[in-house]
Figure 1 (spheres, one colour):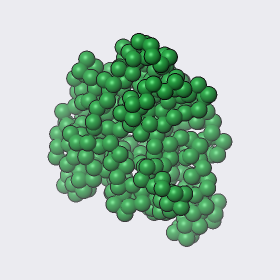
Figure 2 (figure 1 turned 180 degrees about the vertical axis):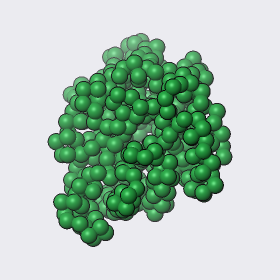
Figure 3 (figure 1 turned 90 degrees about the horizontal axis):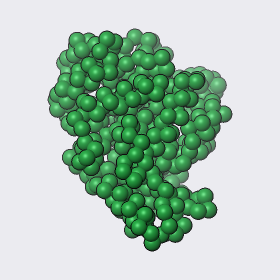
Figure 4 (figure 1 turned 30 degrees about the vertical axis):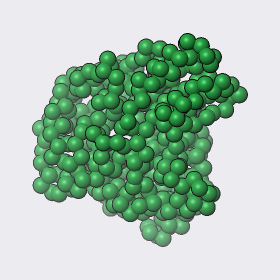
Length: 403
């Protein structure tokens, strides 16, 4: 739905179904129910997630036309998509495979270009579109040596430039303005604003300016502008809270380098201060985290140490084996918990970061796309589970109240 500070939706990656028939059935079930509760009298925007299989099927003209007709009948529109998870995202072990195939793969390129062609066909006139995507690769897949990491970065960057060139051609030929939105996350090859900006300035622009010059026959200045227009940041609030980056710092860092935010993904992580080792209070806190240790998704933990430095655990089980580390005084865990709750018994959420970033968006909008992304409804502890359409509607209405 359109708000005073941008288009607001939720990401449909919460709905199971990896083929188009199943996913469309979920949309028909839940989208009208959510719209009735949050946007009954105005068009409702959809943050569409398509697995590779579903994208192949929706790309067929008959399916695409049927979907467009349904959108019109329901007074809905698509303006953003989630192109991060390529394969199965429900009823399977996802973990680090959420990054596969990474940006070194031709499959990732083909999938992303296909999504953009679908988005171009669905976008309402004069509305820009964006697709969020993986942060190049997963750090643990290419951390044996610096040469391997640099080779991965270069290969991924060149593949991303193929997509940027395609988006520029579409726009220059009269099509919609669309951008690929890189989504940093803990243990991604890009996991914070510093790494994103370093990649942009040290790799993407040096490789991209001559690449785009050659593809489009433009000047270096125009080539740089093309890259900054069609490659933007997906600011996932949960992810940046996990790496202890305050929203104002992230936005100021981006602005300093003239870089844009394509999408704000509104999400919350778990956090708690850790009492001294050996106390019952510490056991209570770590046992509470243990309730969120489930086998489907990665739940990276970043601990804050007494000296102000950080310790990274690839997943919650590794953190739970280090509960007696005297140096660690806070944990933050990657678990997209409901936005509208500040506390989960003895644990807290990073909801304060959401409030801050939404206040900054109100003061001076930095993106046109806002998307709630709580995808863990199926794996939440039983006492936190509600009917999906009610849960999503409560989240969107809570965001509207903040705005």
